[in-house]
Image (tube, rainbow, N blue to C red):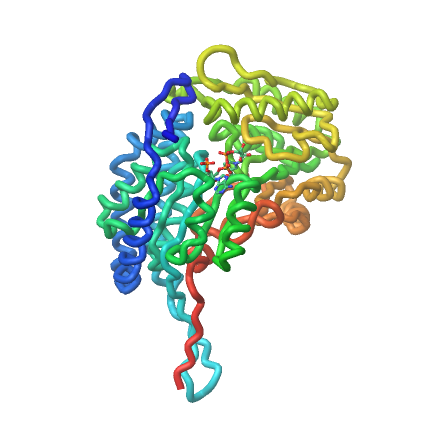
Length: 455
Ligand code: NDP
């Protein structure tokens, strides 16, 4: 099978890629193993210097890579620039703090013994990655993993194979050993056998819960460490004392950035009954005013959806929700013409068991639900299989903290939209996955916290 990349703004083919055959994958795993033996012995300072170099290479190519993301998955160019810059920031963060994060932990259990924990690398780590943040998701895994002394194998989404090649080039041009970061062009059904291979020591996946389950099952059978960053259906709670100007404006961004294709997008807006009408009117008005169009145009707020099948799936979820009784306030039909465009869409009066309430809506579609009070908001926020992030809006910070503490999620933001930051851990609970990325938590995930007792 030949892979094809397609421009979602036009529907036209960009490029084709041949899958790697068994011998190529085998050689890549051998090279990864050999490279690991020397890479792990480089000083942490040397590895940090390369992370800094990685940032410089990225920054010099920001516009080129932003354009590449626009072409392959429809991300508006200004958002692509932001993504590349964020990757560079991440590199700089680990260039600066990586050594500190991995320092031995002195315990001192006995007066006459040296006891400590050392964070030692595991070996080649496989990363299965999605198309929605084709640079960020990969760097978020790879930079801490490599700084800790591991080597990386990437199975990227075929939707963004051009980005996968570009990332491989960035690592090489920054001066990393040839096989420290390798991209494998393989179909999803070959991942299981790669996980089973003894040369692969751990695996991480960012993507749907369905894919996460498959990878975790394969890893479990082979007793291999996994980190899973899966989907979300994040609650965005607007209480009666919220600053509505901020809450409305941020909700629009939080729901629609990256064409709404973000795991931590605000997908379920839970709004207090006292401000429900005003919030909903203003939110619908601002969603309708967004400019949908060519991702390379500076005026565009929402680009196309990344693939035609994803656009169709999203539309089916919306139609099924409307058929079940939800009210369409705006949007709701794919746009006519070339490209895979879906308009900003708002659903209200959403019945409990329809897709808009129970499934992840991966596009610019928001549901607004009226809640009676704080307790009702918390109950609905937790009424989901997901638990990635959450956001609460109130002028009373302590009230915000109290509500946030009761939401089952990997993160809680008060008067701010959910976002990732290299300095803070990122990861979910429930069907949103487990394990942490970023910060000192992330860099230690693919290490062996090894106990030393030197008498
Ligand atoms: P997937 O989760 O299917 O894809 C993500 C990655 O996992 C891709 O590299 C994919 O490869 C791989 N993969 C899929 N199935 C398996 C498997 N059984 N074993 C090993 N690897 C696998 O996302 P899609 O692109 O199909 O998008 C579908 C839906 O997933 C979206 O509508 C959205 O709801 C959700 N999603 C969530 C993301 C998030 O960040 N939360 C990111 C992307 C998607 P391949 O493409 O070759 O199948």
